[in-house]
Length: 205
Image (cartoon, rainbow, N blue to C red; front, side):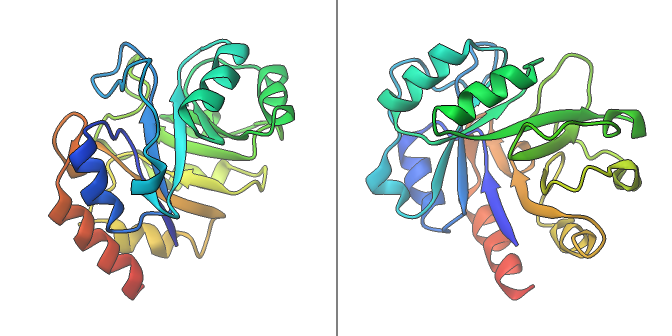
């Protein structure tokens, strides 16, 4: 099972988390987020090694994302706003792999989704908050997802429920698990020991 640690910001913390070798690491370019990396942030590729960097955005202009991807050094993007299919397709045409995040509260949120993104990410709906809620949605809702595209499972994932999430992949096309606020000491600073334990659990399962 592939896995991602999202909301990284502090350079020393990035270096330590990278040692656990997550498949993906997310960096947030959204000013409203407490995990915002800032406009001048550049992905430390030498630190990440084989870990793929993902730029995370909320309703940002396509041209701005493309320009930033070239300057900051990422080829995957994760969209948490109301981005339309034409925007997603424009990003893909520019050579970017696109994850479209969907906030989930009931089965209607996962029904009738389109084919434009490369992957979906299902996170917990909580008011206007776009990710990082630390709460888990009802996974039974996933039965209503019929598009068939692989998706990333997010929302309240931690070492306590990672085995249950892995088991869920026997029923649904889960591509990866996304860890964020439940493995944090504070916003943007991950508990390295917690991340290591998750890495070990994933390796054993």
